[in-house]
Length: 171
Image (tube, rainbow, N blue to C red; front, side):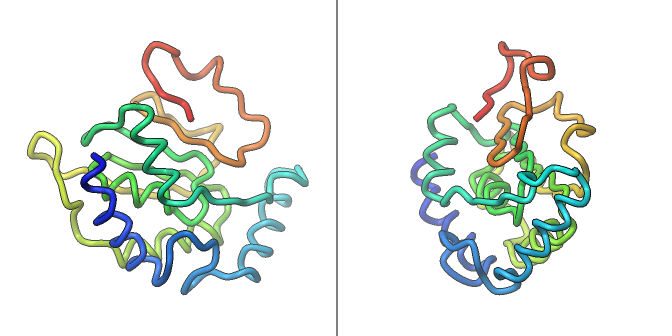
């Protein structure tokens, strides 16, 4: 897994048109983030719901290693923002899904998706892994097939009743 990280982060940088450590990149800037924050407050009624922050790619890779991620596992990012963790998980061979409520951030992730390679650099069990972004409320998302669930900056989300502890890694 570790041996794939450098290539995956290089591909991520290419897709996002810059250093993927930055929250601003070609096609997404501060003005769009402010618009997305207002959109989230309008949709949820919660002032905190517009808060957005990203985990840097090296941190995402370390997190995936820490939970024992392996090619072919199902990865969900709930509140996926511009999609970087989802894209990186896919580039590392996971079957990856990002779920985002903000149309602005969802569109940014879809734009970056078009710049990713046509297939991940590795395959699990000879099968091509999926990469998808969904524009929907995470509370209505079925992620019962997930092996790994990532949720950063999701306000008041309780996994206790929806994630069997014997089956998933929630980070």
